[in-house]
Image (cartoon, rainbow, N blue to C red; front, side, top):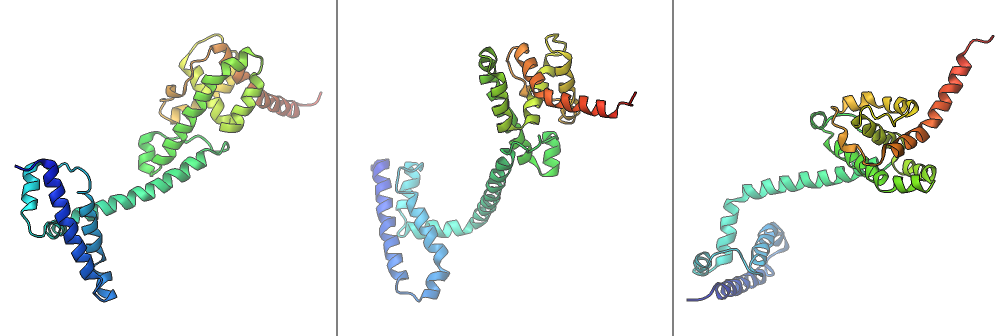
Length: 254
């Protein structure tokens, strides 16, 4: 009784000789006929390739295939009867190709610091056909939060928080960075270590958090509240300066 390995070697050798004879015959045909049978040539080659290494076929299956005088032709004929499956595979491949291109373009768009946070929930994104935008924005915000969580505390302790915040916001965009801090403050509720200026700045993101379904705790970081407060106050300074100038400008003269 031949072993599985012997059966595999036997069927591969048999199919290799069959394919070599088929290709030799094809070379004698007119170019138009060769082109018209290009699909058959490719399929036979792919079927043979599946037998180059160890297969998942059982010994009984290999024995049956070895019984055919022309096993490669038999497999190709059987494959044609299942050709609708291949068309489905082609459709899936086309969709995957398009999706890969779209995903890369959207990810590139969300690497731009000026790109706003995607504001809708995942279910809304699916309805709108914007799942890639939802995913890219989420991943970018998670990476933004991870950077702060990893480096901000050391920068704070070393007196280098302003320099860190400048690099952080230049990379991810000021709004995304403040959003991460606002999500953290929202998660910690009534933490009194958050001072009014920081709370006011965080409040600017309340509507966005609500629009995103309130599921924003995933963006919260684990840094100490004093670090969060200091960072938020530092990032809010330019905004408060503009607000004070506007209020002064609008105040009636005495």
